[in-house]
Image 1: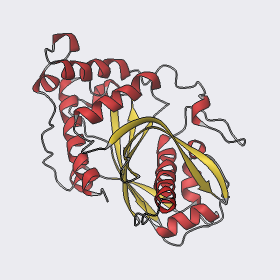
Image 2 (image 1 turned 120 degrees about the horizontal axis):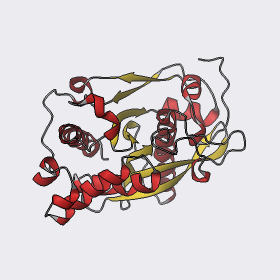
Image 3 (image 1 turned 180 degrees about the horizontal axis):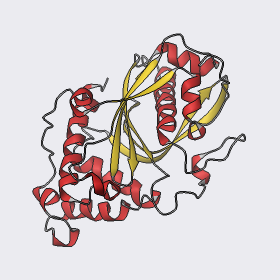
Image 4 (image 1 turned 180 degrees about the vertical axis):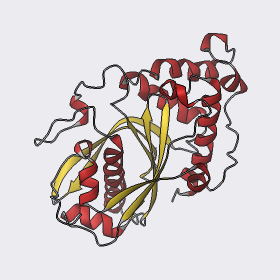
Length: 278
């Protein structure tokens, strides 16, 4: 909404009001609409990950590690979630070539004419191309310690980060920051800037992902940088997996039926991530 105030805030201080202030809207989509097909592909993980509930019953070391991290990350505590995310992305084949998964990223965020920070849980990036391919944000509302503050999550003077905020606005702001900061780095090194594109993102509530497609346009970047209201809306697509066992959603990937479905969603999303690699 054009009348809403727009202030220089760190990405981790963003709320739904900040999205409205920059004409950004979230739209939930079903499986077929979001992934482009109702028939999700099979995951490339080892069969034991799909069929064996507990890590100590798995023979393959890599598969056992992934399932072990599922158990540790279920409570939503960041020290357990971030290693799980890294192991999950590697185990499902997200990085290719020289791409890497980094944890606890800090992107400079130019907003309303001032520099702030955008801190994320994890990111998939290509160091050779100086591009960020995927941004992952942790849902701090999830888990036993959902109301503790974290110094890592906010640097602004106007408000301390509290963990009961919706992580979706934080993810959107972080993706904007990641896209812009990588382009600045590319231009400083004499490379062409990446053209505006749709950027993928994930929010992790323990081991349950929510998937995002975030359009980054020149108009949106200008509006955020200048603190103005863009005439054209930005519509962010999001998808929450339709779990076969929805009553146990808080257990994320622990129940096998839910685990298989989430892994198939991740495989479908991996195709989108790599298709949008510049």
